Amino acid sequence: MFKQMLYAQFSSACATLFDFIVTGMLFHFAAFNYVGSTLVGAVSGGVLNCVINYRWTFCGASNSKKTVAWRYLVVWLWSMLLNVWGVTFLVWAVTPAGAAVQLTTLMYSKVLVAVLVAICWNFTMQKYWVYKC
Image 1 (spheres, rainbow, N blue to C red):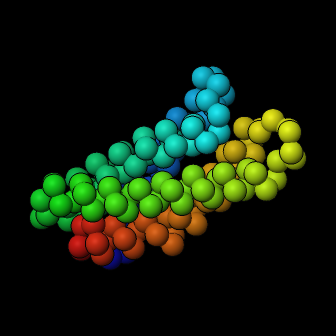
Image 2: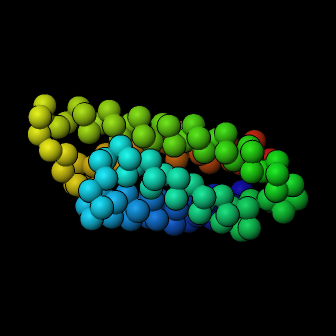
Image 3: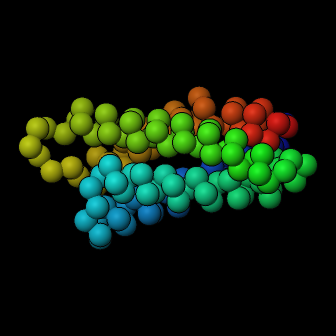
């Protein structure tokens, strides 16, 4: 189980890094607002995480791809909503009214929320419901 948790954390770190890169690039270079860039980043990271976990982390090969896909979608949609709501709330809470959102504020908010969601939701739901390992 410890080895599986390490693999899951590595997979999550890869997906999170990809999520952060996409979010930061869309916000900084493409002038997306922070909510839209957070949403697209979360989608990108979620897809990468599902693929890595199916092939490497969990016993995905023993489950049908269709079952894994719809269960992952349910867990991931909640994860995405928790991340977007959490980041939106934190950015709103620390940014003065009328002020522009800073990239550092966005990214610090994403780190805090991502860690909380990963610990409290993602690993447990993926292990015991999505992949049933």
